[in-house]
Length: 230
Image 1 (cartoon, helix red, strand yellow):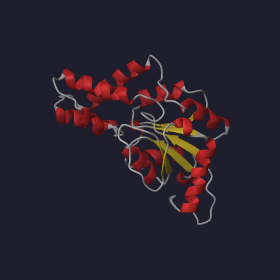
Image 2: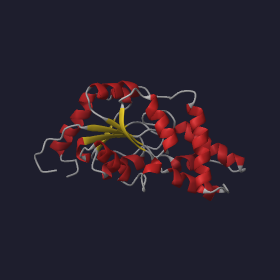
Image 3: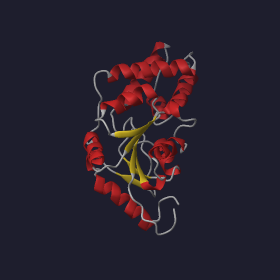
């Protein structure tokens, strides 16, 4: 983007698990259930290694620990277990529904950018009010998952916006890396494995502290400080 060009908030791109919805425990529990089915221990360290990763990566980790299933079988098993838990309702994190509604009222589109596959991603997206999400990029819709920038670049393209005019909201190291590699400022909410402080990373204690005004201010300040991608 040319020097001196005003950055305007045109879209907000959301990670899902641990950012908008409290589903990270669902995935970790499902992994543990599969491991125990094969008589394996699933440690906290094992679980942390999967946070924010593409589902094939999680499947590979389970295989390395001794689960004798194909990657496709592991992924399908994980999806079935998590979808079953979601039947009881979507566990939105505090402040999530409020900021999504405020963005919709301000006519600023949101997109869901998640490494969860479509069955879970679409269930969460469809639980939000109509018009909340203008695009969904799931883990099975991109050739390369986070931390590669492909998921966030795909979402920006679907929304027909320049990445530098987007703010991403994330909770993980791989997700934050992905969004920044795509050229976006990132709001970081508390997560299981949180990224370290750095340029272009804006930490909040909760989505309850995020407003349309604060998201707009992030882009204004990034222009002043020169942290946004060209």
